[in-house]
Image (cartoon, rainbow, N blue to C red):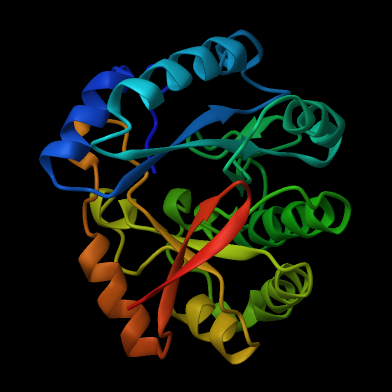
Length: 256
């Protein structure tokens, strides 16, 4: 999955991403541009312009590669209605549901963590995800489920302490016919574990989870497809026999 010039944290031209994917012999590429209502306001993706350019390139490059129209919804409980309107307005193939902020406070700059103990900000993060997925169902997978760990300056938080909350999240995901994402940018960020962690992936498998996507979360052409093979090997080690891509919001299973 790729972010391009339509995301506030990328300057990669969409055409460059497509040409790079073709050069790497990809069968398809899915664009997942950012929307984070409540925080970024003017910096959110212009969905109409994104769709117009996507449609143009889809026709132009159709003999060479399949393009998928996706979005990454950085959702909070108070922004659910805005996302529901956006989802109803466009022909999405794939929606990643992520949590990048809580109460409009960002993780990457420590605004959310400030003034809280490690236990408080971890538990509050997972509670936000839990509250969102209890009410919002128009998504494909949960993106980088333990994102808070990427920005935890206090080091790894013990899995057993948050396992009950994560298990409740995964049970709802499975019951709703949704999935989770392995985000290979964990390598790029120098994390010592996968994202989500091996513990979360194992728990998802134990609970009966089957829908899992692999995303390089690229923001530059050189990020495209990075560490996908390593993620496939990890899935096989844990016991998964397939991974998914999406089209028109339906999972397509591929054997590992």
